[in-house]
Image (cartoon, rainbow, N blue to C red; front, side, top):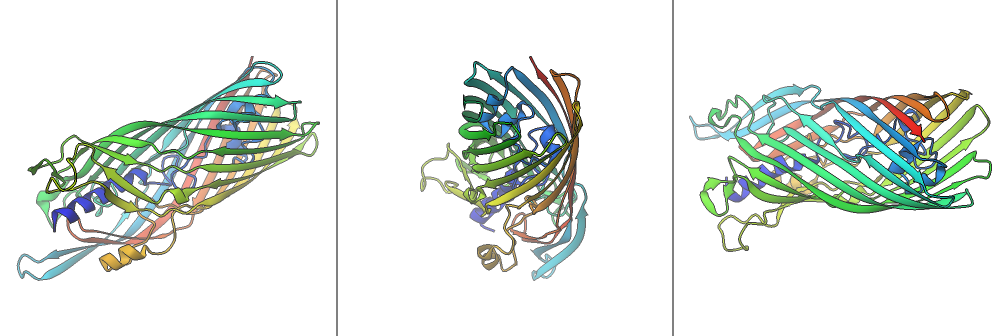
Length: 467
């Protein structure tokens, strides 16, 4: 194996995991996005989350939402996410038989059960009206996140091992209101992203025991980035109908990571491997557009509809850049620019429908349903299939993304006109999908299998207070 192929295989295996685990640890929308912005929204499957404004959590989806409040409003809560992803398949290793010198292969079937970690996704919001026209908002939530952890003996930890991506979104906003019917708002979105990824040779690697648990790549880093949002909100004179429209710009955080590897050669000193070498990895996070419509028919019933478009087409590939590497052509090992993985995500829609029932002034009950289009493409990556001689799917173990269904239930209890609590419960599931991958490091390996279970339970609670 050449040094060029070795470095490409190691980085492709490890770094592509930074966007993996799309259905895990809260990453329960298309790709590795999050929906869990509020508990009241959870109860109605987040239908019309940018339009209703039953508490300050509307600021996560629409900066115009602060105009709905006549006094300071505060909301704080969180969602516990318990996903379960199972995968299974046959792993085939290709090697040279040391006894005969002839090509040989060895296959093993294995299952990875519940490799997605549970997580708590918090949020907090504040709406502050200044006068009849102007208001201020502040949203603290997370839009992206994941965590996966395969067992050390999983036969392809050199393809998918341990990954964690945490993010925090801080969005101050300002809104202007006309005649208590139409408001417009803008926000600046500050995103903090922290990524940790580990990729290694499987434990007890029988074909090469001396390589067991050797690091293909360990990286940990973080970065800040900023974007913007704009939104409009219209409500009827009687307040029974709300229509919200909002847009959030794309973000491109450049993760500043320190890289260690037992395989990747140091471009300045070839006898050594990389140790605490600075590297940058840019994530092209998508822009979104959301439409929400809410109507309260009478004192007892209301209905909400939502549609969200996510521009995952922007997420085409992953590239790594080592800023300390000397100019191209001056060193034997050239990493820059390094194409790591073609992802070729596709944009898609999320549709949601919620129904609310108000049996009395203090209580609201909610149910909801949503259908969320997955971002990972179906079918084969023809370029990889041609290059490797094996069928290779766009969908990977690191990104077992699939379209999914949501069913939700929740409610609100108002203690008085100042304080209320929300609760919500959701179950979601996706279809099993085939996954086929090939890597050449530490030796040629082909995985042929797929997901055998994609589901999750979500439980949320929040407190709302006005003063």
